[in-house]
Figure 1 (cartoon, rainbow, N blue to C red):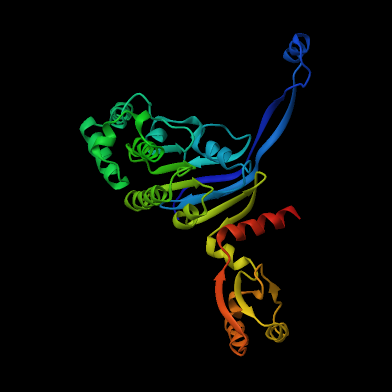
Figure 2: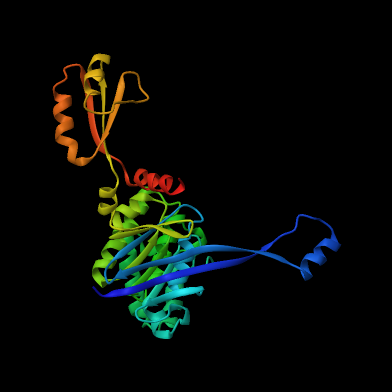
Length: 330
């Protein structure tokens, strides 16, 4: 495999000023000359790779280290320890060749000038990246069509656009130079589900067309499931899991659940084979079991006449990840 992004044993600690509680000018002057600090380790000894044409999803609770990881790998900040290589280069050096091949999209921090139109910003970026303006405009129109933006939207002042339209404009601006490495930090934050799906489809098509390598952070589990080849779960700045979603599901016991309504007598008989737990509704119960036990569970339930409303389903990815976090806290 051709690894485009390599992160090996990387750590980053922030030095944070402790603001004193005392009020008054004298105390303010004292704290200016004699400041107290604390150290917060944002990420500790993380390692992963992203191959060409792969999307890696960074997952974690608020403060887990996702944005710090994006900033480290994209070259915004420098690691205290470890090695980071993107396309064979140290991203923090931000060479001209590196900047031509890489793009960073942060959902909460846009690049579009609110007083200009999207197409005006495209022309500006065309100059920065030495792209022919006609070619840049042609690319922008093609991307806009794929994202569901009209040519009129491209001409409007950015401040008049909706949140979804602005985010699509941010993507056009960030992809105008056709990067092969893309860092996406919460690109669908606050967007409606139709716009989220449009952006996901655009990213999938872009990855396939340009064989791009992408690192994505998102709190929306649908983004992760729909886009990512591998996931990297962070917990308090450290690796909790790294691999495919399928592998993660296989590691969790009793991932499958069957819910049903049953009489007390039926529950008593079923309990001889499986642990039956009470659900929230009256006379509703459920059994947890591994996928390998599905046939046996169906056989036990089919022998009972006094049960109804049988419903099989697997735990969703967010529930599985939540169980991982709970295990890590123990």
